[in-house]
Image (tube, rainbow, N blue to C red; front, side, top):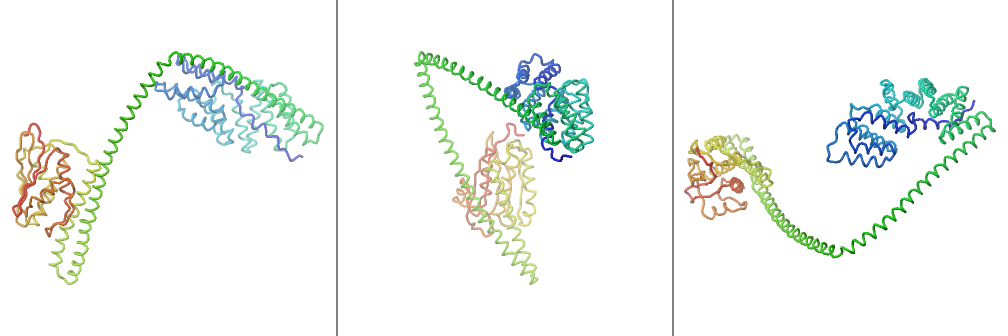
Length: 580
């Protein structure tokens, strides 16, 4: 029994085609699509796409369908599926299997040609040697096969299932399906597919060394190939017979088949060369014609250019003038933009430097103070000096509160500078907003023994952003408390300025300030300096934040103060047209 049969698998790679030849398949596919898309019979674009496909112009089909699908014109959802189908089919015929799979998977059910889509995906899986996936697809098609579904042959489905089983080494199943497909092919008298089917089942038996069963099918395949016009089938059947005879040691017969194989191989090569030559001649003829057309066009263009040269020169000069004007304006605009960006960057850098100064100065000072105070607390607790430890902890509480307020102001300042804060100016009941802010300060006011009075009438309204107004009041109240001694008084009240504005006044009877300090506080930059007041920790950031937010609320800030006589912080804000 021979053991070497290396060339008998060529048929297994040649029988993935559907029952019909490509041209027959395209005509059948055209009929199927036309019958399914009668409602789109008046669509010129779809008719053109289908015509390009039937004429095997795959690239033109892809370009045309892509243009339609990407256009702004509304395309019926069902018609979109058919455009995708034409694209997937064209990509498959161009051997772009990855592209074909991607397009076919975009076609969602329900779709009238879903069985055809699955069939083509099965063919692609076979070509990629993904036999398990192909088997699943073709078995599903076999299960759902309907005789009324045109273009999908049950014999071809069974043949492909048999091929999958054969490659998966499930030879018993392969034999069953290949035999069934042969019976159907014989019934349909499909000579071309019979040649392939006979060759496949012959290989099935030959691989199992069942030469008595295999050789008759090889002979049948060879004889049937005589009646087809496919040089590839003729070549491969002759080659298979040569290998069979070589394995049977009949070298004379093997030599005969080898010569026939060479003849058909040469014929196939010659046929391909003739086709290539015809294509080349066609290309040269087209190029020659194009040269003639280009020459005539050039001559005509030269005459037109000569006749209208003056007109073109004028247009060129006008365009040149417009371009110069455009670039001049663009240059001016660019310079303005660069200058604006530089100014903004300078402001941001200044803000960054100021914020770093605040963090490095005040926060570091607060943390260092807490560090030293904690050591004192530990020593006093060890010595059981509870009274002294309590006083230090109270001082630490003040430091922590100041540091927390500084951090809160830093956050709000950063959000304001980076334009991340949300602003909504609306009517606000001022009395209740003051009450809401003061509520959190009641324990601190009592601890410091300060008297507070909210004299804002309940009917007073202002136009402002609610959250930013709270930040303004909180910082002004916090400053009033910082610069007040025990038993001092703090009060908030309003005064009418005119019909459009109202003044909110935060007044304290604390240490006050001189004129130079007032001017410095009203300046536009953050002030970072050491405070002369022994119990005050701050940087001026809170007041700077107040000024920015007051300005954003379309208001104004002013100060009235004298050393030793207290301070009035006056915030002027717009009021509603009707102030109840």
